[in-house]
Length: 446
Image 1 (tube, one colour):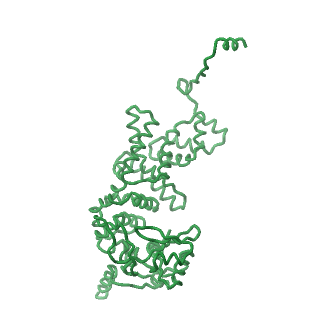
Image 2: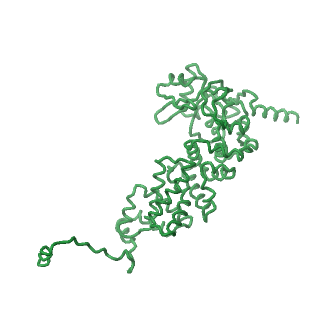
């Protein structure tokens, strides 16, 4: 009993910065050969040059959780300028946080210098705006956000260095903040989004003390640059657990800072079903390692608000296509205040929306022209999503599924012929250009 109590106190002390703990291979089970060659080359060359170098953060965390890391970041006691000298193919980036990107073909290893424990430059809200003070490995661990992200792996010794009990927290499947959560959130409000995203993505629970201030401090996201919010939003959407992430963000009241339309869309008829189907389809494609279009995802997230606005404008007598473009502009303006979607994504989103009315036309030359549109596939997938939620008839999506796979003869047979009395059935009369009487007389004689 006493031994268990001592063990608990010891682990708690370590979790809150009790000191440097070295965890051997036989305990953590991460072998050097589990790391890609470009990550090993980076640490090996830095160590050969006389510096400390470790795989750090999310890669170590994911390996301990039995997942495949997407990125392998490195931390070192070498300054950015010293790292740049070691690697010919590298570049120093950043002003707020100086980093070095080491290039290996298409692969990039991000190398950071140990951060110091000195006071960083902050704004009036306590948010860090510049932090290029260097320090020790222990200082760097203290400056990281969560205990599970403050782990250092030495590929040569095959050891994990743990200052804050991150390995224990991974074993307990929890996310805990290093330091006082409220202070750390004020330093960087994006940490609140990150806590929720990592918990949902990795299947972890948020430690009660770490979770407690989130709802109260959610308003701090108003001061975060929209570009940073967009980057975090992309990570959420491409996490493979986007629906779970979004719902947990909503539960914590964090969505108001960058997705103010969510509550309204969730309250619409079939709104929750539509959003869930869209995001779960995205999650499935990511898990299957299939390509995912950010423009398509944003089209799905904002469509219900566009649709609602569009229907109101049509009811007010506006022409359908003009009403659609006006609705798109209005929704885009509301969302722009919180989340600046880059033009390369926004243009795709708007093209997908603008294609939807064209799927209603299934006669004449129009279906053939639509097939040739560069965004046809994305527009068609979006049509299927709308049909699955009951917004448009399933028969319409089925028709396009068959039409695009058919040969030219069958496509001609599939075209819907206008009914008699339909304005489309009336042939357009050719307008004759005005001619002189003499010319007309010649024509009549022939």
